[in-house]
Each structure stands twice: as C-alpha cells, then as structure tokens.
Length: 148
Ligand SMILES: [Fe+2]
Image 1 (cartoon, rainbow, N blue to C red):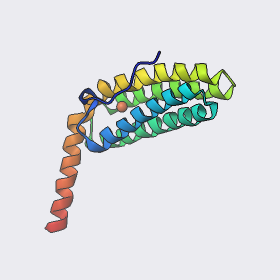
Image 2 (cartoon, rainbow, N blue to C red):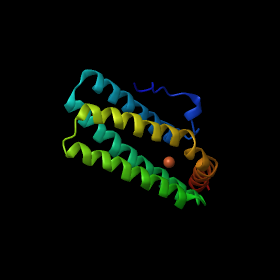
Image 3 (spheres, rainbow, N blue to C red):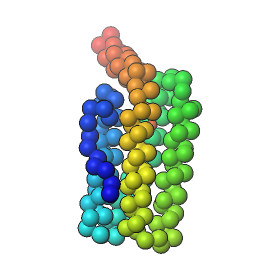
Image 4 (cartoon, rainbow, N blue to C red):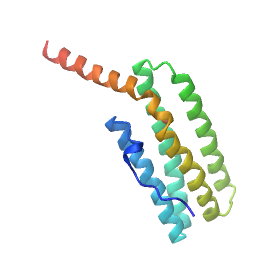
C-alpha cells in the first residue's frame, strides 16, 4: 500500500518556481495512485512516462539555478540527479520490455516516490540559501538596470 502523498510545509524551499515544480511532481505521484486504482494500463504508461520526463527536466532546471548562483556543491548534487536519471530510465526500460504494468507502477510509485520526496525534503534544502540570494540579486540588478 503506497503511503499518501500530501504537500506540507516540510517540503517547501521558499523558492516559488521550485515549489511549484515540486508540487507538480506530487500531483504526478497522486495521478499514479489513481491510475493504479482504475487499473488503467494506458493511463499508467502515460503518467509514468510523464513523471520520469518531468522530474529529469526539473532536476536539470535546478542545476541551472545552482550554476547561476555559483553554488559550490553543484557537482555533488548533479551526481545525485544522475543516479536518479539512471534509476528512472531503468524503470522506463522495464515498461518497454512488457513487464506487468500495474505491478511495475506500484514499484515505481513506491521507489521513485520515496526517492523524490526524500530528495525534496533533504537534499534540495542545501542549495536554497545560495539560489535564493542569486535570484533576489538578479532581480535587484535587473531593476537597477531598468531605472538607472
Ligand atoms: Fe535536486
């Protein structure tokens, strides 16, 4: 039985664009639950593919913010994202090979769900102060350039 996925303050980074994307990941996890409950293989395949693609591009987006911020632990965070990518693609390959989609969807929901929520709750917190400072700095700089 998959644990319930509910967005709570412990997942917040305080960076609006990141929190929006993380919430989107939570929506996908809940969509997987619904697809499993309906036993809709078509829907399972659609949403599993969507969460894999979305999470990987979200991770790349995070890295671009870390890079702009000059975040010193970018490489380590990038490596963590790379391990996620391998894991997610391995699930994708198992779907392609024709494994029982409902059983596999339960496994993805448990494993990928736990990975993502833990990552959001813990690892992503480390870049927050640097990225926040850089985003705010960027905004002030743009405003100054505009008015002076
Ligand atoms: Fe991350």
